[in-house]
Length: 205
Image (cartoon, rainbow, N blue to C red; front, side):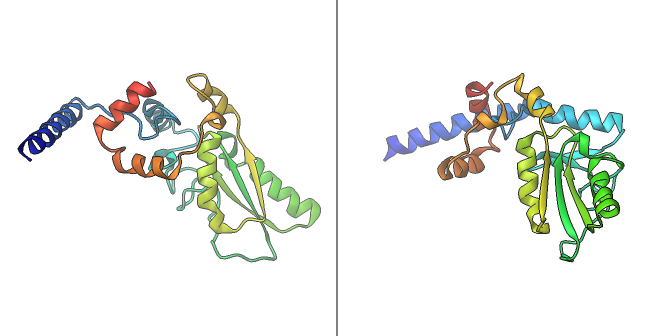
């Protein structure tokens, strides 16, 4: 029992010192190491904070970054354009647009598409624009899952550029397999520990 307690204490002390050292050194590797590097996440936020052309973005727990609600063309829910109620009027068609910076401007293809449907074809429609500058299709899929509460009739997806650019530094999104239940639970339990992030750094630098 003494040997066991000594061994456990030694292991806890080792990881405690390692965790403290990494924390004091400011080490922080991505919580999403197989999706995008943490440094790229920070670069995106810093870039749009400085440029302030079409966006201001903030960190997001699963999508890495998101449009800052109420800034530029983002409404209070973080979607582009006018705010739409979750409650539906089924006489009006609802279109969910997923995209990147090509979809966030005040006069963009989602607005034009809805305008053409209304004016040329007499189809009453409204748009929900789930788009953020710099998004890959992986982030778009996560945003789509969040947006299904709006019960859209049609989903239009516009991605490609950012998947291509991100792929230059690693594999494209579609080559990454989904985590199984055990892997996901383990990841959620340990991903905030610096020692766990260090392990990911060595495996997926």
